[in-house]
Image 1 (tube, one colour):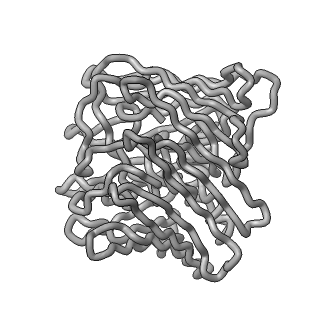
Image 2: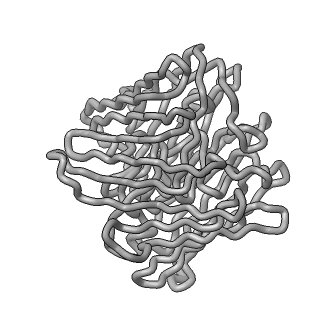
Length: 364
């Protein structure tokens, strides 16, 4: 599952930076390339709590794929948002089309600029997302656009099929460029050790990320430094005995009151059952939960949103599937939150930012 985030222009794909970067600076930028974003290229977390391959590799061609997701943003029984998916003959996702019809009832508003559906703007704005691939079948270009903006992300790979650079361009409705930036990823062998985000025209990065691994090869920290201010945001990861994420905690050493926590829970079949978001010390604290439901075939069919984590259901997303071939697509987003099983030998392991898009796996 993935959550879209809101930003100035991004996946909130584009955009720059939700809560974390608001703490650090007033710059804007973006990131990765899919409708599903982590730091959404924002600095805000993209969340993926579905299952990739158990060894971190592609899950393989699946029998089912998502055909449509409907969103009831106020849980009144009326679905205001609809996202439809289009696939190529080989089973790869090539386009998503999202439309919104206001039902007159106030939609739920979650903290940290989180959106439930949209990639580049708020949930009440129609959008289209397109994917293009290179001759080797790798994601080459991601484009998200509406009437007011367009974000284009272009990917560069090394000989090991690892992403080394993502170039992002954001344009307004007239086609004028409003922002450009690059993510550059650096490896030790096949292990991602650092990545940077640099605004176009700048000689040094705006953001620097450093990954820390334990002796077993698990990512235990992802430390983001805002170079302008020197402030550091520290993501700390803990894992369960089944090699899945337990908690991820974000702290800022110089802002002792601030804390953001992500709590993962699983059902008896080891599928993601809930994901809690809790922020404290911001002056605008928030608590909310995503609760997942599955059908008899184990497919993810419903997401319920519990704002304030008080037991109420404030919004609902329903996922519809079709029995057609689907080929998983690999993407990358800064600090994507993933609960896939950890394999320390895989370069795509959770904590690195790599993520298998959810159209073939758990839907959203």
